[in-house]
Image (cartoon, rainbow, N blue to C red):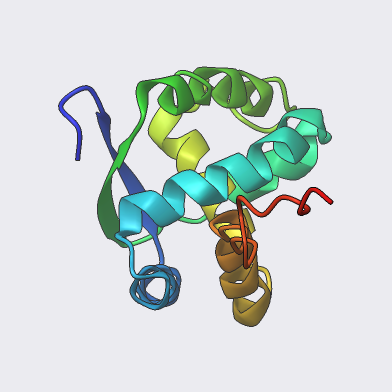
Length: 140
């Protein structure tokens, strides 16, 4: 954790929290890294999506609070997502950035767990080094 990261609490169901922890363990990272990757993966689509469909995800209360740390640049995007959620016909008030994060994360976690794990691996894949990085053709 870097000192300039933003701490947020997100509410999830027990099953969602378990899946998130399994993904973090399999990714050899921590939960905050997986949440940041999830947000990077899903945020563009959520900001472009119909707000009324997003607001449906705000409904049920989730019993588990998970504390995560996000880079400030990423956390700064959450009020825009909260604003999109507030523009839906259902919400009576603007959701908090934490509620917006929970909505995004819960939608991301609804995908196939194997697909999520593969996506995390792909996001962090390092290109394989060439066998001879400084090889030059021999001059004749």
